[in-house]
Amino acid sequence: MENRDAELREKILSLKRRRNAVILAHNYQLDEVQDIADFVGDSLELSQQAARTDAEVIVFCGVHFMAETASILCPDKVVLLPDVHAGCPMANMITAERLRERKKELPGATVVCYINSTAETKAESDICCTSANAVKVIESLDAKEILFVPDQYLGHYISTKTDKKMFFWPGFCPTHIRIGAEHIIELKQEHSQAKVVVHPECRPEVIALADEVLSTGGMCRYASRNEVEEMIVGTEIGIIHRLKKENPGKKFIPASEQAICPNMKLITLNKILWSLEEMTPEVKVPKEICLKAKAAVDRMLGIGRADERIKPGSYPDYHGH
Ligand code: 13P
Ligand code: SF4
Image (cartoon, rainbow, N blue to C red; front, side, top):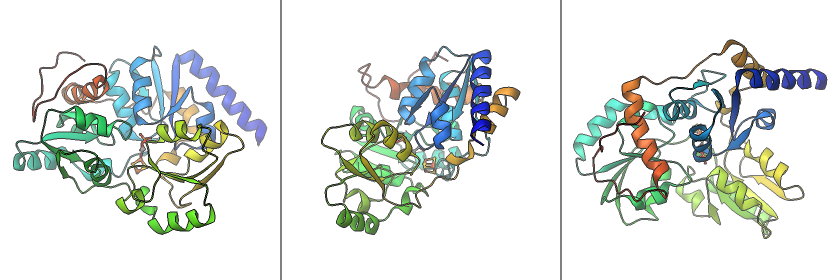
């Protein structure tokens, strides 16, 4: 079995070199997929990696919206998603058409879209954000009213950090809502020294019990601090692999063993090899949608680099691609 795995890894690495490909993996991926990746990270870090890679092919080990974002940022590269069924249920809780209807009801609101959304939804939005930069993005906006889509819980968390008036879309992550306040309360009794770190996709009553509310990348950085010896981890359990690997000797306790995203687990080593052999399934966004969605993603990536203030409902002319 071990020999077969080693052989599989060898084949992937050699084909990856021949294809001039890079393998990007999200922190929730299966252990063996994380271990073969060139880069493992959160949504923001992965989109930054995609934007700057020299590789001709990106093998995206994550879910569909992540591969789509990579394709939006690098329309000339081949972006492969080794299982085309790896979608994000939250991203599918909104459609561009329903968003257009809601925008008509809120003409003065700036639309901020969580990166966990389809290219069509991004294309209808003024700017994107991820869990790592959401508060910073909202604070950068020259707008009093924000329509935040599609995650109501991330939206609610941001609203506790800003004075702006926020309207939410009723979407949510089916994996993070499995984490309950009762899980955290029970684990805190058992592990009184442990820091409680949760993802902002969790429900408000869970967030209220946390010491830190962080993206998955933020969790990895926080875990490496000297004062952190034990951590209750309120997110998808795939991240535990990386936390343990990077912090031997420290203790990481999942807030709930049920917090598994089945879509993230669809990518396997066999599928990565097949995908590189066949150069499929490729994720590509139609040009018209891509240009508009790219403007929203670029504005997010520009926050901190440029002093761009986004006005309500405005799409500045966009000439890049
Ligand atoms: P981050 O890794 O960006 O924190 O996002 C979590 C997530 O749910 C991705 O699908
Ligand atoms: Fe979507 Fe939640 Fe899975 Fe992330 S963990 S991909 S938000 S369903």
